[in-house]
Amino acid sequence: MPDVVIHSGNPLQAVSIYDFKFPCPANNEATWKMYGHGHIYRGLNQGQVYVEALKTEAALVTPRRGIEQRIHP
Image (cartoon, rainbow, N blue to C red):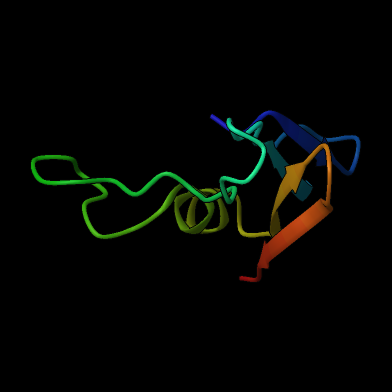
């Protein structure tokens, strides 16, 4: 589940998706979780699944760098 979904006023019409990552230690890079063996979304990452499900852009956000990655539909 994404952390924040902005919608048009209709919850079924997503406009933007934001997923917050807090990597520790500070020098670790923030990344989307990859789905592995045995998972229905194997080979995809969280951002790709969010875009596929909600048909809008997904952004990975960190406290130090802000928006680090965007995945577009």
